Length: 207
Length: 207
DNA sequence: GTCTATACTTCGATAGAC
DNA sequence: GTCTATCGAAGTATAGAC
Image 1 (cartoon, each protein chain N blue to C red):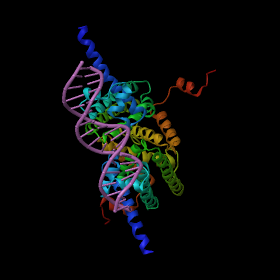
Image 2 (cartoon, helix red, strand yellow):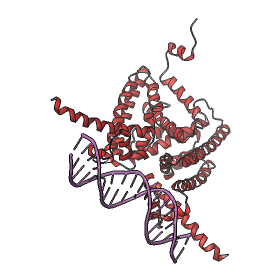
Image 3 (cartoon, protein in one colour):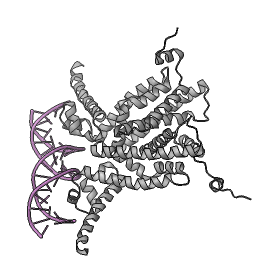
Image 4 (cartoon, rainbow over the protein chains, first blue to last red):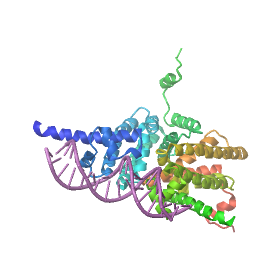
């Protein structure tokens, strides 16, 4: 038992290191550094190992994306079941490096059709979960869907957050403040803070 | 006069053909086809000509982007001075192949810093023009900026349109209809159709 | 301005020794 | 499972003939 698991575990570890190296590279550098040689170098391994563990670069990028997906799923789950799911969801879409990585996956999706299909499925899946959560929130708190419904709100937040990420990378920031303020008001309406949280946020003390 | 202009005109024509070929490739295929060899092949020219006319690929991509910018500027100008500027702006951001090209420029901006700077400047410039136009519209028609101001509206439309383009390429469409309907209501409010246009749109005839 | 030829680098991927 | 060696294709870019 112990004799067989040794080499296999080492093997798995190299595979994981490659995935993690590519994952880091996509977050820090971008899609143009996604190559067998650069990923291997980052992982401290020989480039040929990439093709030992993965049939092609497409297979690797899908593995990396699935790692992102899994990681994102737990954060997503955590956000939706938190005390302030709408705020948490906004923060998740907006602030995390995962948002930047998403842009790189979209770019690589142009080159690797199988990745594109993977992204389509997971994208629809995440949206479906968000919609269901938001519909529950609407029902529980009795929001009307006249100005904007749960489905629209979910997509709108996602679209605005993605736009912030992209424009932030290019360096365009004009009118960002206004929309940040608009989102803040939206969150105040759909996911209001409690009194004690407000006190904490404003820094004021009772008495 | 005629003798000197001959070869120079041919020279300029090759340069333009290269720019146009790259422009077309970015629209039809994507950033990964942006290479000296492929652009030249598309233009029906030898790859080495690329480096005769352009110091580097970065210089070429900037020339291509400026071509996009110029083209977009005239469409932009036309939209903002049209009878229904808000609707025209939405259609411009949303429907045109230029939207898809923009995604490719963003990707290439990761590789070419000078392109990124070019995009930043032109991006802010276009947004500024849209804001000024929208502020004029708000003032003329007496809209309040309580729910959403002119600056927020401009960015919101741009963000949602960009998101439609990106998700459309990946194949994610969930909840798009709801936001399309929301935008339609937004346009009805901020850029209402006249009675005769409504009659045309609904297909009904008077009498 | 356009051509041929070519230098140099990096890419994905495979074969075969250990 | 990891190594050395290597292939062929494609990438940017330059030199020099015409």
